[in-house]
Image (cartoon, rainbow, N blue to C red; front, side, top):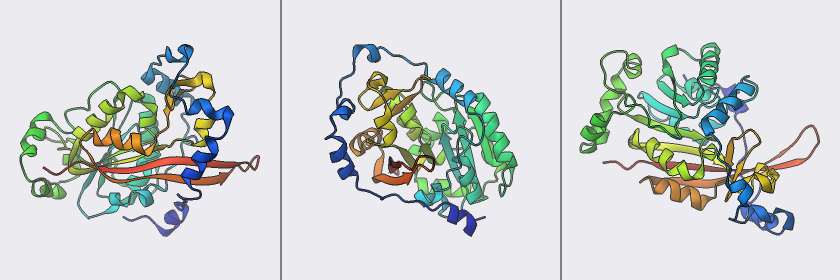
Length: 320
């Protein structure tokens, strides 16, 4: 089942409305914004230690309506790999929230199964409700949510157990995984005696990694890599340096270099291309795409121009 033409129209977006280098030069000339450029943090803010999972659970409780997170209709244009081929595709969505990323993926094709984790059981229940009632999505067992604080815990063995990882590491992945295209949806949701789902084809990190403390990012990326099949992709999109939301943070909210804490205790980090590349390549991944997406929009209420900067990336796990 492909997306309809009307959905494609809704998914139109721009990604190069302005030049990032010109934005950087402009921002770096403004004295009042110089604290964003410094790696130094004041002693009062450096002592801040949020309890990440609890902060996000409270956040989801306050913003539990579907209106807060809009469906990411641009996703399939940004990551067309999700639509490639006809075989059964398995996706792990990390930090799924109420399902704004999950919905367009499930709508794209009937042969996609999405495993989705979040630290909040409450928001996962909301995601299930939204998926069940959504139009153009068939078969409820194509969406498999589970609770996980991925900042501090490993992914469950049923995604890609240690035994299967070891047994596949010495084999030709392209031939071994071909047989899974013939598997039923039920077999990939562990209805039966399977030890695990034998890894996923894609891991999506969509505005998720920026909420993780910078010191824990290598751990999270390594764990995402561990459940990928050889040849699988991590699809990444997150806040970029000099995004307008970064420039709105006050000096007292700065807890690290390009890392800030909101008043509710949740974190927000802003990525450069170099830092993004270093983080993912350190996990043994191969960079396929990495760029800034620069989008100009106008606030309808006050008419002010907004310049948004996001980092878009695709990273591949090497074939064995």
